[in-house]
Amino acid sequence: MSTPRRLSRELPSLVGQEVRVAGHLQDYRALGGVSFALVRDRAGLLQLTLKKGQSPEPLFELFQNLPRESVVQAEGQVLSNPRAKVGAEVSPRTVEVLSRAQVPLPLGVVDKVGADLDTRLNHRVLDLRKTENHQIAELRGILLWALRESFTELGFTEVETPKLLRQGAEGGATMFQVDYFGKPAYLAQSPQLYKQMLMATDLERVFEIAPAFRAEPSDTNRHLTEFTSIDAEMAYIDGPQDLWETVERLVTGTFRRAKERLTERGSPIAARIPEVRTPFPRVTFREGAELLGREKGSPGFDAEMSSEDEKLLGTKVEEKHGNEFYLLTEFPTEVKKGTFYAMRQDARPDLTNYFDFEFRGLELLSGGQREHRIEKLEAQIRAAGMDPASFEGYLEAFRFGMPPHGGFALGLDRIVQRLAGLNNIREGRLFPRDRFRLEP
Image 1 (spheres, helix red, strand yellow):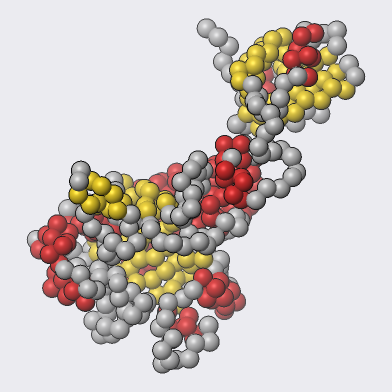
Image 2: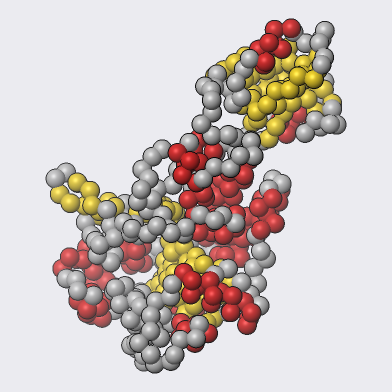
């Protein structure tokens, strides 16, 4: 049986033992009678040390002529060395070149020369070798784990819904049409209709983490064409306050778990995850409009808020309430008029039971109480300019007993962007897609 491969972080515990290590050659330095090859693996950097008169002579020539970023595998003895990055080094007996890198590299991996985002994304595999990008990928994976743990603790069941649809939740204007055996179909922009239908199945609490697609020509630093949507729906709610409390518990549990796990792994991003203080301030949409200086009763008072409005409002709410998290509640019906499933308030039909969750001036989550009464739901579909007959599969779930319910959706990419402090949301995905990019 071959010697198992060891990672750089394991070396201090293996001093005196024979090991096999492998990774990308990051650098090679020859200093008189001693030479150092720095090899990068998924755990960090390990040092191969060659000494004249002790190490096999061909190894010096091998490294001297080997391009950086080539993949090598070495076998040798682990020696203690407090000056090495991990406190130990490997004195190699044999070195095998597993893959020779071409030269020149189209993108530097460890040099200090900057590259614009398009160049980085064009050569994404090399870009992803950078330590900071490993940390972002680690953050993303840990957030997915923490979200699943937190949802499960709250009694939710993970589900999967179709991503090929006959129609969308809000029409087809922002959906990608595909050929489905000679008939038109659409890529899902949301699992909205399906997760509502599941509320009539006695599952009662469901969540889904899945890709979603939105054909919006948005060229901003916070929009993507393909993104990871985290959706949840829960039945037997008494009102939107049940959703607010669930969001508080979900965010608290997720951030706590993620911070603990990242701290254990020594990630510097752990320090960026704040302690969550609840309850989150509740700010109605119209209170927010007043904080922004909009004139009450003016035509623009109930207008949708821009990203700049969100940033400014986030600053004002934090100044007023001392919390960088808050809930923006009671969205006007005018803002949500295309959202036919949003429940309007019986006493105030001009208001909905919809809300956003904001963090550091960025909307991370939106949701609200849904309309579960079939007559009102059909009327709202018509008011949105659509035909209820086109939604018969969806509406059937409401004809045979649908409990009061509501839910929300949050974007994983935006959470990663905020916690990692990224200027552009594209940096938080391994291979991002926007309206100009379909490769690599």
